[in-house]
Length: 384
Image (tube, rainbow, N blue to C red; front, side):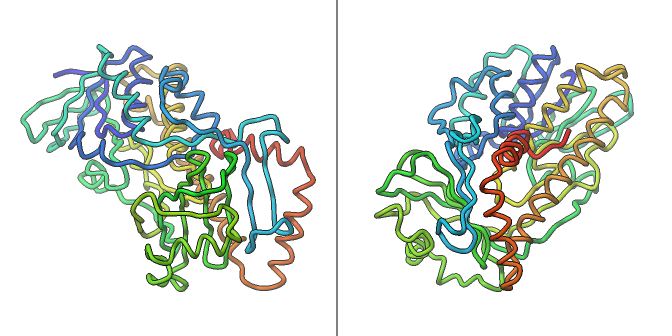
């Protein structure tokens, strides 16, 4: 089999990349280990304006079900109180704060588009066994004895990239020394499409409005403050009620609690010969701003722009070198921005607390600066 590009991994990033490359008249083969297992995974994602525009460009945005607008973001320091509040609202800035969508609904629409696209071939229940990179092209042998020749291979497999492991490429890690708990709750009092972030001494707690009466929760807890008894199913609802002054009425769990270590990373390189890494195969950031998927989409946008603007011939080994250099800088900067926010809000002394409260209070009245912050977030934390 022959193609212009092989994509390994059919998650949101892998399928979005395939559809974007197809629009540039490239022939793509997607290799997926287990599509059925992948479809069963359902996460809640925060979507920026930049990512929304991208999904509009590949003609899937209007079809994605149950997208919820974020009309406001309310940030609290230590206590759920007006005295400790920094708010960003659509009404104030006349710009959308963002959107919330579930991965199963995004994947469904991406898959529909791919099935209709004659330039994309999808191979399921398949893994890459051997890679031969001879600078002119890349040859792949799968565990099902399929042989594929292409100009490039893109790894979109996520944090446990088998391609990266086979090439001996390592990650540069940031250990946040924290645990993350992810789950959904239903609540009695409507959230009015507002997202909330409460920076506690134990770590940030994020409330993402999936619908008017449900939140997707992301709770980060420092290791030294993590006690499994305090964050199990029996006690987590009391924890939420306490930190919000019971502002959402009766609440209940509507999903299981998933717990994992919080670790950020950048791949030591985004390119090895004719193999490139995209999305979680290349980077991961702290979840406090919900930027993970958005940064992966920014990678795809840069790849698309390279196809449109590069002065190299497509077959040239250096064709995507600019992507690899630029996005490594962009994503490292994004990771450092979020790390800085997490560090600043983690200080546990009275002087630091006073300074942070004063800064938030001053910023609350600076409409122009708040608009700039919203714009920066909607550009996926990129200064470019």
